[in-house]
Structures are given as structure tokens and as C-alpha cells.
Length: 264
Ligand code: 4GX
Image (cartoon, rainbow, N blue to C red):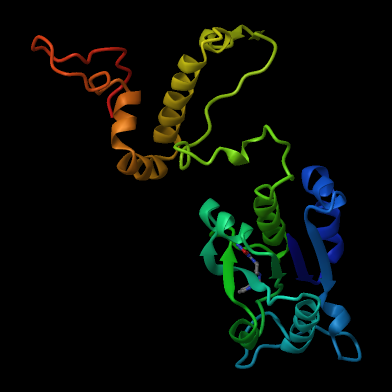
């Protein structure tokens, strides 16, 4: 997967994406991140890349010429027409489902804006999609571009080691993670839950699923509501609120009552 980043600060992007997991993936050639300095394409004698806004007002706007030329350069490098993304608080807010879709692209061109943004004609003519990393305003699009590259890259085959969790796209999707513990068994008087030492994998799995549900309901009720709607039966069962596996009726009484935790 190839990312071409159009930026006024190529060193920031490069430095960050040379570290750790993404750095390793770049060295291995699994992902490629090219930084393209927008300023290099300015035809202005002082290499200016911004100007005052028509109509007046505070701040500066990035001029279209260097951006168009830098973009054309990036497009020409590639055999297929890549998707062009502008990082902006006006975009769709990035979610894991958007990240998954972007992973299917062979190449992305990502434009990082500064000041009050870019001339509108850039958005109209070369940008396919505007993406926001959240409803707050930063000083530039570099951090958002790095967030996007990091999130997409970890889904690319070979970036994470084989036992890491990108394969786990299953019924756990849309829930927060279960609690994790490592050694020591006891730390400052607090012990690791014994079930995790039981060696009983089915029970551990059940316990983890329950914890995922509980903590999602507690910390992210918005996510929980959505998940519950789509997985009613499984949620009820996990909370011990369903009769154990619908068996044929025996005597008469209901056969739930097992390990009820809390109500849903
Ligand atoms: N998620 N920024 C873009 C320049 C700008 C200003 C106004 C358009 C309109 C951001 C975010 C973000 C800072 C990137 C302002 N562009 N990008 N930049 N939140 O805050 O993606």
C-alpha cells in the first residue's frame, strides 16, 4: 500500500512514521510513505504557498497552484488514479469502518492543509474525500494524516505480527476490548482474576465477552446500544438472561436462573 503525503512539513511525517511498527513495515516494503513538499512546487519567487482570503477576514489560505502541481506530480507517479483525501474538520469523521474501506485502495494521496485551509478549487477539482479525525481543530493536517496512515497500515497484511488482532473481525466488532493482565500475579495487593489462570478456554472466552459487553455499556453506551440491537440474543445469553440453549420443554418451569450478572 502506498501513501503519498502532500505537506509543508515532510520531516514531521517522516520522523513519526519511521518509528516502531509502521517504521518496520516501511523498511520491509509492506507499506510505502512518500512525502511531497508542497513548497517545492511553488512557482512564486519567494516560494510562497499562502495568500490573503478574497473577501477579507483573518488568516491565510493555501494557494491552489503549488497544491495542483504537487498533486499532478503524485498522480503521474502512479499507474492507476489514486484516491485523494483532504484531512479537515469538515470531513466525515474517521471510523474503523472507513479505515477498512481505505485499506482496499492501492494508493492514497493525502493532502495536509494549514492556516485557514485550502482554496476551494482544490477541494472541487482534486479531492475525492474529506476526512476528519474528530470534532476539534488542530494547527495542521499532518497529525490527522499520520493517524489515518497508522490506522490503515495496521490492517495491511504483514504489518502486525501473525498473532496480533487484525484478523479478529468477528462478533467482537463494535465492542471495547476485554481487560488484559500480565505478570506479576499479584501487584500492590491486586490479583489477576482467577478464571484467567484456570486454563479453561471456553470459560475464559465467555468471561472476556461478558467484560467486553459490561465495559462497553459502562464507558460507551452509544456503541453498546448499536451492538445490542444487532446482537440481541448473544447479549442476553452472555448476561445470563436467556434460557440455556433452547432445549425442548421438560417439566414446566423456566430453566434460566444461571449466573445472572446484571440486567440489560
Ligand atoms: N481532522 N485540521 C486542516 C486546515 C483547515 C482549516 C479550515 C479546512 C478548513 C483536522 C481534523 C484539523 C486543522 C486540518 C485545520 N482546513 N483535520 N487544517 N480535526 O483540525 O482532520
